[in-house]
Length: 229
Image (cartoon, rainbow, N blue to C red):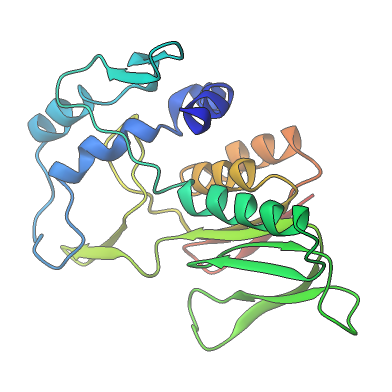
């Protein structure tokens, strides 16, 4: 309930392109090797009718959540790990732990620094050459995390479709390969990384300007890396 309440403001950004009710799309998109053709427009339209964060009804008195749309589903996959990482780090800090790095399946949150070091040195993975890094960055008292389509995707008719789906169209991202965001709030960083995966160059630049304190590395499908802030 608390995480849903905190999300209510974030979900209003970008006209619903970040939407935790996108999970209804899992009925038509499969990334387990079983899918060999694109969903029809009819299937997309039907699935899109189950999407819409505006139709999540929270009742704080009853501690209940009601999904008003039939067959609607909620997934915290896009932000859950980051949320858990920051909460775990904050809990440890409150208990007096001074050197903290929480790794929630690649979503990192750190406090302090390693003994004898000035900061935590984190390598940003190159999505095209997995054994290489794009850059090494110095991180302290903040989150750093990546959204990308280079680990979970499907090839259909020679084209790759990633697992991050645009809830407005029902189609996956194709123009960006990965987005790494570094900043104080893990949930906001995860919102930015997921949303930026679905935006074009102009839209991405505009969104990045709204949160200048968050550092962003965006890798496009053509291989170019763009830095914001």
